Length: 148
Image 1 (cartoon, rainbow, N blue to C red):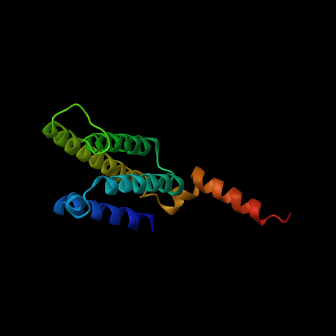
Image 2: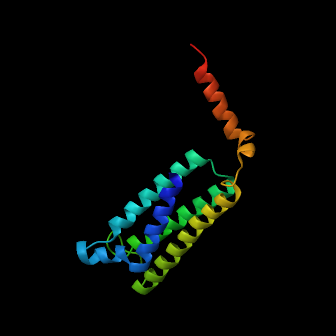
């Protein structure tokens, strides 16, 4: 179910980039920054869930952390266009910085997903049975079976 949500999020991001949906909200609602803030909250929730459910490796966590920091840089540059605060740069400079940070964040998130998929998602049941995560779950289940 988690991976279905990740795929749906990636598809939504691709559609948004292709048709510039969040840019169109500027004309409909007069503001497009709130949607970007909501996307950030969804990204945080997704990263927390992924960390708790899948227990990714250190390399995957580093890529996701880097992607998250680039995502924050993207939002700071985007919000600094005068709506929330003003960054002392020309609009065209802010536009290109925003696009660069956005693409770097997306690519880093996807690099983390690819690394996770190629290293951890391919674990066989035999490899999983000997893993630390399996041992912890087995101890918890054993503790829950014992009568008090």
